[in-house]
Each structure stands twice: as structure tokens, then as C-alpha cells.
Length: 192
Image (cartoon, rainbow, N blue to C red; front, side, top):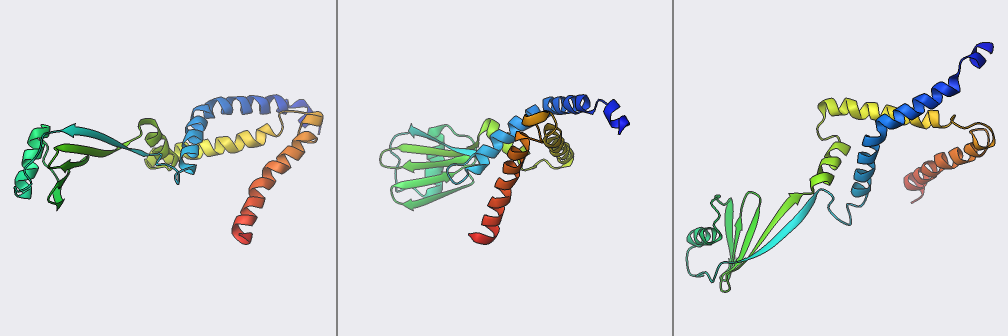
């Protein structure tokens, strides 16, 4: 027991908690932002956004064969890329599918709607890292981060002493923090 009193374990605990906290700050922000975005996938797509743009190319003759009509439309749009496919659902409409999007032309008016799906620049990258899409070395980095969070949780319990520490108010807060996910899991797994 005398050995434990001579080892400045609280000082080492604080230093470990502080330094791991600094190391984990960047990934914590990344995972928090991505987690918020992914949690609300039912409300919006956190990875992609739909881009729409209207163009005017002048009326197009609806009596041309679909292939010629497609070439004419792309020429007027000044698009050199080859289409993947085209489809004419009716006499007044032509849809041209490209690698990155789709042109929908109203032939009598010459109004063309371009629609494309584009990744959200930051969120797409954050979400891909969050779900461990890269695999390989990122798996080990994510595992280290998880171990760091575990260490932060344990060392954080012993930062404060006395009535605000783990033997006082901290015990109640820790119990609540553990009870919330446990009670939710019981409700979700057995009662709903």
C-alpha cells in the first residue's frame, strides 16, 4: 500500500488523459460530424447532393431518329463526351444518360435540364472514413482511436477527487451515463 501512495498515479492519470485527448481531438471531430450526418440519413443524403441546371438550346425536331436527335442535342450543348444511353419516353422528350449525369430535353421548347449526383466534398470523405471504407491501414488507426476513447473514458473517471469525483457526484453521473444506453438497449431489444 505504501508503494501506491508513493507512485504519483493521479498525476500520470491526468497526463495520460490530457495527451490522449489532444491526440484524439481531430478524429473525435471527424467522427462526431459524420455521426450526426449519418444518424439523419432518413432526412437527407449526407454523402451526395443532386445538382440541377437548366440550359436553352432552341427547339429540336421530334421527328428525327433517337440516335440523330441525341447527337444534335449534345452538339448544341457542346458536349464531346459519348452518352451511355438515350431514351425517348414520348415525342416531346429526350433523356440522354452520361457518365456523370443526365440531360432531359423538352424538344418543342429546347429547354434542357441537367441533373447529376455529386459527392458532398467534406462529408463524403468523413463518412467514408467513419464506416471504414478504406480498410487496410485505416482499420488499425480506427482501432487505436477506439482504444484511445476507452482510455479517455477510464482515466476521466479518476481526474477529480472528493465530492465531485468518482466517489461522489461523479458516481451518479457515471451511473446515469451507463444506464441510458443499457435501458435503451433493453427497450429496443425486448419491449418495442
